[in-house]
Image 1 (cartoon, rainbow, N blue to C red):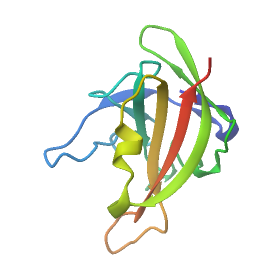
Image 2: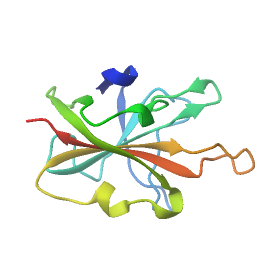
Image 3: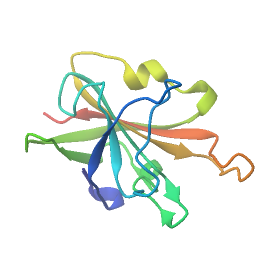
Image 4: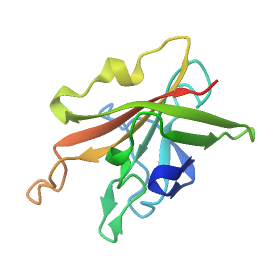
Amino acid sequence: MVIPRIGVDAEIVAVATDDDGALEVPPLEHPEVAGWYRPGPAPGQAGNAVLVGHVDSTRGPAVFFDLGRLRPGDTVRVVRADGRTVAFTVDGVGAYPKARFPTERVYGGGAAARLRLITCGGRFDPRTGSYPDNIVVFATAAG
């Protein structure tokens, strides 16, 4: 995956859900990679392909550290396992409290090939060791 505006050039690994049904994230030992939600569509297929990545790690910024800086019109390119590159155009970026995550808008289906990029957001809470929000980028396949 390449996101020129924020300098991302990252490998993608498959992720699914954990035993509680929550979206898995790539291993913390590899904060430079993004995870593709494999039970959903692949990037470029009809529906919403979902990629998730860390915002930071104990070593510093991670793959999606600057995700919230994306703006409508920016480009995200994904190289699929079949070697085909799919370009997506960012439609919008939102910040959502985890308790009010827009599940249907992120995972919902449809005929268009869309991409959703997700990371943590808000102010880090050292007591809980987590962030209160999610940053979500909404994008649609270009052409």
